[in-house]
Length: 314
Image 1 (cartoon, rainbow, N blue to C red):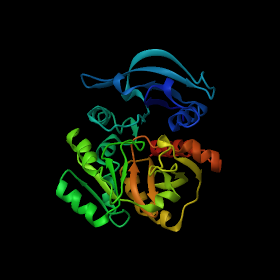
Image 2 (cartoon, rainbow, N blue to C red):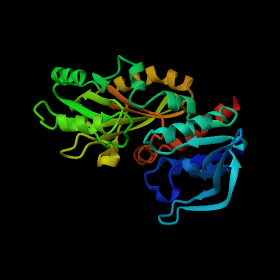
Image 3 (cartoon, one colour):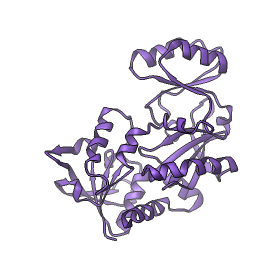
């Protein structure tokens, strides 16, 4: 199947070719003989009823300092693509949301991965609430009385922004920590959004499991160990990846999530599990492909394209 594929992503010149999942997704597309195009979110426009993007033909290579070539810059009608990969990183702000509205206009005639309506409708830290038996005690609120009551009950808590990513703005607040008022002022005075308050899971010291699901099926996992003195296991925040298999509990979590992910057109997702609790369902631009391949030798990018091609066949 010869496909025309567009990657909507952050600047290609800035990616880490040893860690970026979009890079290996793109190189696998080229290996399959697909035409690959690239554009940034700011290159996307609505011209009358046409969704267009200033874009470039993209070639990728596993060469440090020489990993890409751009050619044929022109405005392209994205409805003429077979697949658009929605792969820019959060923050999930109005700019991000606007791209999902625009891509709604071409999906599903052009297959957008992940489905833009479902990306917009399923916030990564709120989607978990659809599965109440899987999640740790948590509160999403701006109400100080509710936050104070939650802290009084659980004592050891995590504070984090609702739409953050990569571990940015995540704080572990112990029962005697006097910074709680300053932290809540920082969150609530600088944003109209609620804050996420979660019971601290001490099992995070043993790792925060990232599990990749493709079309609802678990395909691989890594365990992320937080650095000493840090409660965050995100690799952007200094967490170290290690090889990992799925526990019985983690298989149960995936079995409960899988049908819902598949139904919603969330073909590529990454879930986070700490101590048997589901903490996030990443639907925007999940990562972990390259780390899993280094440990397990499995090319999840090939599995992803197999799933996409199967969707197109239908």
